[in-house]
Amino acid sequence: MRDQTRIPCVLMRGGTSKGTYFLAEDMPPDSETRDRVLLAVMGSPEPRQVDGAGGGHPLTSKVAIVSRSARADADVDYLFAQVAVGKASVDISPTCGNILAGIGPFAIERGLVAAKDGETEVRIYMVNTDSLCIARISTPGGEVAYEGDASISGVNGTSAPVLLEFLGIEGSNCGALLPTGNLRDTIDGVDVTCIDNGMPVVMVAARDMGVTGYELPDELNRNTALKAKLEVLRLKVGPMMNLGDVSQKVVPKMTLVAPAREGGAVCTRTFIPHVCHEAIGVLGAVSVATALVMEGAVGADLSTARVDVSGRAAVSVEHPTGEFTVDLLTRRENGGIRVDRAALLRTARSLFEGDVLIPRSVWSPAATTPKPAAVAA
Ligand code: NQM
Image 1 (cartoon, rainbow, N blue to C red):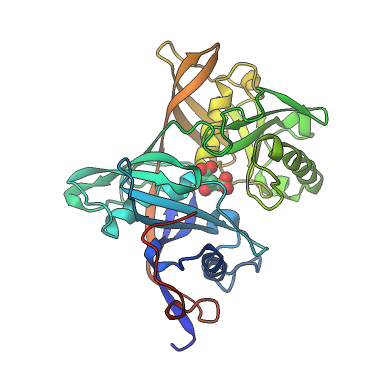
Image 2: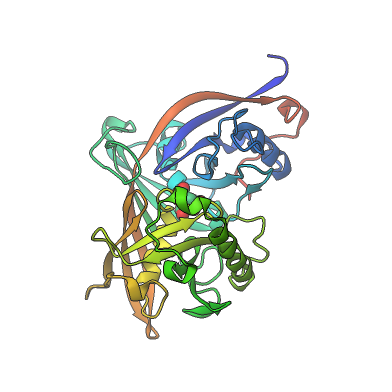
């Protein structure tokens, strides 16, 4: 093939998302060429991504770039990239906790981490947010298992469990758990809670936006008036959350909250940020669960989430395709709540291994400088 460049790639489902996973050494060294390559890999900006590996939806237009870590506290570095659908942009502002679920299996299978017999712990440095996650991967006989009994809402059947544990991720995107300095802000007459426990999220009561919060994503996606109102709010709160101009960023996410209907703590609909999520993002759910246990936050007043005497809370966040339970370990400090640890269950599956092909006119590796040793944001 004269005019196509081959790049080794694994297509994986990570939680309720799907993406292309690469070794950093197989990617272009500079971020400008890398972003051009990722657009070509996924088939963006064309909205159906028909000329690429993307699925025409933000949840299937995701990329992981992985390398061995130079850090003492991590085995691998994981850089996440959200490739836009319908426009030529690649955003590395946030990380993605669903794609994160595939990093442990990918790292083991690509020889970056040696597997033990039984379970293997993979310590992952999340480059985008300068924070850490410990993933526990099922590895009977020293090989990654994909089949198992774990089930997560939004994915059919059962799979091997991937346990994710986050330590100290408060403010990892915005610099503070409550980046505006307030538990509640009022923007254009609407009360919001702006929170970052791993993902910048703006919590808004669904009723304040003129909806029930129980509509299905298709209906909300057709509600252009609602989406326009949410975007006005988002553009205003972005700078208040220390994120600067967010017009080209996929953060903050906008979460509508309503009282739970299925036995969970609260019901959510999350815009990521321009399309309604079919479920909820992983770190998005951690941020929402955290707000729910903070007295006075938007959503906490509608929620049944409670912290027990030992500081633990298992918060079930309802979403359009089921629920997502986040286990929090909290402590009281200066009259408020701090979260030391958040843990949750995901699953992942390797779907396809091989080379992804892109036009040589986009990138011809022979014509560029040597490859970097590690991923760089
Ligand atoms: O919040 C969707 C997803 C995500 C991100 C999004 C995620 C997270 O479901 O950590 O997992 O918010 O864009 O993959």
